[in-house]
Every structure is written in structure tokens, then in C-alpha cells.
Image (tube, rainbow, N blue to C red; front, side):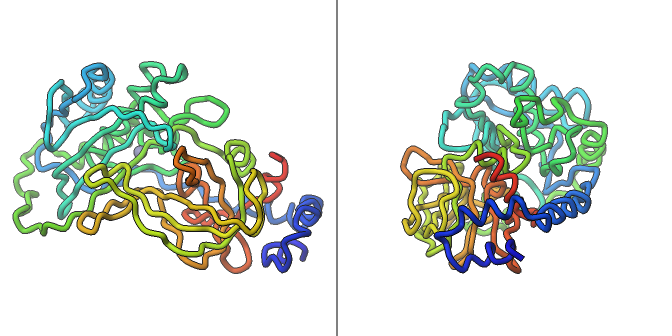
Length: 359
Ligand SMILES: [Zn+2]
């Protein structure tokens, strides 16, 4: 059981040769095959987290240059469902879009929303021009991103990664450059939205918003620019692939009110460097989306915060401030559980052969 010895990691200095043995191991091949057979197809329809009190909404577009993109995204819902949403230029307080240019994140679009007792009271939609200005982002792809974020803003969660016919698929592109998500709502997406916003009045669904406390929870729903289908693709995309131990949480870094920038940081002691220039024994800082300023808690979908003492394998990109971020947040995090590394969100077992083949 070389594999288990490796995973328990009794020594670090012979890991390189051990990894080669793992590749040759038929046990490992059988495990990978079992995994493949056991991977389960996901549920068919998109789920919801809340809805606006009225099905007629106007989204204010702050940056006039992206009005076309948001209008095109809104039309995908307005023309095919009961969600009567339009985009127009102007400043808004509760439902608006903002262009951002962020190179230190893996998302091309983001929906930041507040929901109280099932009623959405605020939504801010971002296009990340760092990605959307790239040539593969044609106007129709960008309209798919804005349509996706408007889908979040009306109350929809992500579908699972196998659900490529839905506009609520989490990723824009595959790592081979092909389009990952449908650019328009599926029949199933439309049915869910029409059930959420029946043509009859929503008055009965209204809740007393006065009763909500001052302490708020803000939620983030990203659209990830690229889907990396396996550990080989993650390794190729990473600046650093490491194994290590979470030392401590070193606090939240937040510029108040900039919810998409809220993050939580942990230090990691490196026990193995699989790809990259950092050294075994060094400590690096990992930044994860979501955090708190003491009053407002920001939770990001697909970002499970690391805890002290966890043993992890991480696929990382370096940000300009020197910290590292897991690729697509949870996609890049594997945690040791019962002597094997599993993805922190999906529980999918880490496939070391796939890492090897990328090195
Ligand atoms: Zn999304």
C-alpha cells in the first residue's frame, strides 16, 4: 500500500521517487477506475435561494459602456419568463451593475446579494473586464455571463458541473477553450423561474423587512472564467501546487463595503512542493473569498474556508500582493480525510496520476 504510506507522509524527502512509484501502481489505477465509475450524475433542475417581492425589476447600469451586455442578459429572462427585468443606465441603490477590473480573482462575473427571510432586497452585479475584454469573450459569451449573473440576482443557485444545458452552469469556458455553459436559459431554468415568479400577485409572499436586524449576511455568486476538468489541468494552470498544513487563521482583510474583496487568510506550512518555486518548510499565505468586517459577514458560494491543522493539497495562483488563492476557490483545495485527499467541496478523491502527467 504505497499510496497510503504516501498519503500519511511519514517522510517528505523521498516523495519524488514515491510519486513515480504511485504512477506505476496498479492499485492506484484501480482506485481511479472505481472513482470514475462511481461519479454520480447530478440533479436536473436549478435550485433557488430566494426571490424579489415583485417580478418586475429594473437593473441600473452604472458603466454605460456595458449597457448592451446587461440589456442582452436581461432580455434572455424577460423574453422567455415571468421575470420582467430590464436594464437601463443610471445609479441605483438596490439593484445595479458595476464593471470591475480584477486580475487577482478567477471569476469573470459576480452577483453580490442580500436575502432576508427568502426575499431578495439587494443585488449588485459585476462584470470583470480583466476577463471580458479578452478576445474569446465575444458579445454573445458576455451576454451569457450577464444572463448568468442576472439568473443569480433573481434567485437561482448554480447547477452542478455536469449540467451544461443550463445558463446557471458555474463556468464560462472549459480549459480547452470551448464554451462550458449554455448562453440562454434552458427549458428547465425557465420553468423554475416561472414557478418562482407566478403571474399572480406576490403580495402573499411579502415579509416584514422591518424586523431584520442590523447585522447582515451578504452572499457572493461568481461565474468562473475557466473550468479545469481534472488535476492535470489544475496543475498546468497553477503557479504553485503544494502539500502542507494549515497553521493558523491570520484574520480577515476587508475594505468596508467592497464585499467582493472580503477575504479570509490562513498560513500554510509547506511539507511538499509539487510544482513551483517555494521551498519545503516555508510558510505561505492563502487568501479565500468571503470574510467579515465585524458587522457584515460575506459568504461566497464555492469557498469553504480552511481550518487550523488541516492537511491539504492546494492548486494555487499567486496574486499581486504575494498571497496565493486556490484556483476557482474550492476547485483547488483537497483535504486529507481518512488517509486520502478529497476535494473540500465535492469529496472527489485527489488523482495523483493526473498531477504527475502535468509535470
Ligand atoms: Zn455563478
